Image (cartoon, rainbow, N blue to C red; front, top):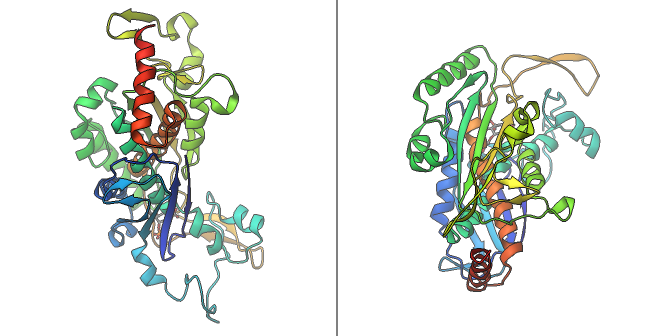
Length: 386
Ligand code: EPS
């Protein structure tokens, strides 16, 4: 199973092609739209989100809501393209008065991208480097979630911090039970006091022309043991999840389970002790490993924490160099998000869902959902006898 995405932020549309979903999976485009809407929410977004109302069109691979086993093609229209006609048209002649962007913004792909691809107009870089691209990844992730749901696997997210304001996160079992509170929160946090403090921090950053990052958590429950593998470096699930999360724009760090904090502790207080119960099988007494040992799921919930840097597009100017004459200038912008950590959490769910679905496809194989289910049932039967 694999996917590709294409699309510029202010071009006509974003697209994705997913190949390798099993046949006979029910996929509701409205459910995909639900996740697209969740990504657009969150306190701290800028003016662009008032223009867009992301909506997926399924162009192939689906017949009356059921996958055919053929590639699924998805399209999300950029409503803002109407405002960029004459500047972002894929065809036609470049207008003589087209203004090139030659002032790279610190913290963006602008400068390195323009040098790497030998592009004179930084817009050629920033249009694709933009986090707008994450809309396609959320659509792809929603398809992966539909597959996971058939096998009782669910993906959740919550915020851990915005800037230096930390929230009390819900432990996994409570997160599942009280997820409605997280979903209703403007900052994906059930901690009301922290939510208010986070909003105040974002408001302050906004009036001072600044931006804020933060930390979010992605949790996956209902996983069988044995997804991923210890046998080779590129099969290790923790590595694959970290790579997927690090590939989201502005992400600077990923922790699995206890993460960096475990490095300071003694082994005897870190490792999750093993228990066994008839009917339940093997389990861990704690979950500091975050559900992954030896690059494989161990049957406990997978818990990942992800750090996002502050958005680099700032109203407050930062020093940069004009590429036309190498003279210094102060980079500032007209429109930006102040904080997009809640949106990034939804994107995090999507890329994690994809990696989990991939690992599940590797384990259960099959060309149809029925074949996949039978293979999975057989594996679970085998586990029940161990
Ligand atoms: C982004 C800049 C802003 C964000 C955008 C990501 O867009 P614009 O330049 O049009 O104001 O709104 O995010 C999205 C459009 C989105 O859908 O999340 C950037 O430079 O990365």
